[in-house]
Length: 171
Image (cartoon, rainbow, N blue to C red; front, side, top):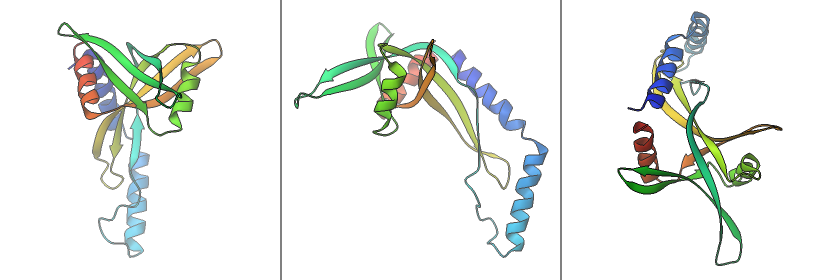
């Protein structure tokens, strides 16, 4: 496992184990209140507590290229170039929704690349306080004299996610 991914996961575990007693008591009080009001035992009353770790810079950069479509419109592709085992390849990224392309335009501005940032997250069950899910958010970030610009992105396909994990583990 790469050093960066290990650091992010270690920090996520640290945050997850440092849940405040007040938070646990609050969840227990809400649960007992809901149960006393006749709610079904074991029912989920909210989606859970999501905790994140501040993003960790990877030192990798996402590039943007403009491609002209058959309909004469300009489209933007976002990708990470890398060499692994002597082969050049790339990981394609997309925003989370269609409106995210405009946000990425703000992030990139006039630049042709933006830094890849990883942010780990954990989700705790409100009822038990146990971690039910762990994962990673990916961001494109650019910092200039006017501020910090950041947009959430995701690998385009499952194969892109697998390639990204290989690149990060080789660092």
